[in-house]
Length: 114
Length: 110
Image (cartoon, rainbow over all chains, first blue to last red; front, side):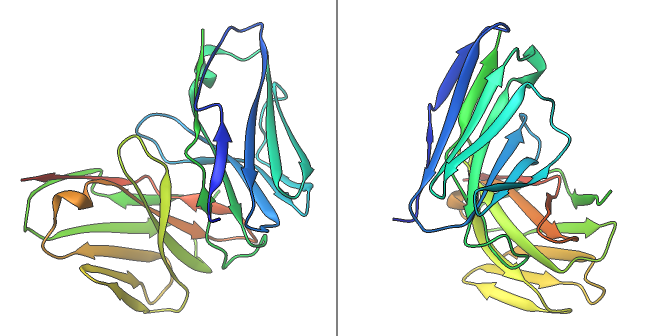
């Protein structure tokens, strides 16, 4: 299994809602990532987890809260988002948190904040 | 911070023509990776280059890493409609942190 699975594929939420994005991989990868991608822009790194511990937070607003319950799962909890947070949220994984590791991306969650 | 620029931003080619995208980093990179994102899809890993001056080929695709490890290129020979998508380079400057280039969107006209 070489897939990274993300749910839901689409999400519409109001600014007062609380929602969660989920990501799962069964490749035994020990590094997992959240990226945000706006239309016609490159993916931007948000968070990196290595061995289930948060190792990088790219100064992301606290309305985004990541969680790594175990080595296969990665969540992104959303609360009080703004319309400008509408984007494609991509989860990725790699074997290790190492400079030579390639990233495997999930198909993403297309988020719309109303 | 590290910036990675790609040119051109967009490229339209007739099917069968060649295509090249260039990637330039503001800092020296430990390695460079290339990803392809089809319309409506997610980035998919193509290749990684590590050594200064390294050249790798995958069928019609040729990847090159510059001598100074600050630039890279992707050349596609005789494009096909299946090559449509956005090509991103991704450079690792510091430990673990990957910065994606601005991307080049390729359209192939049949």
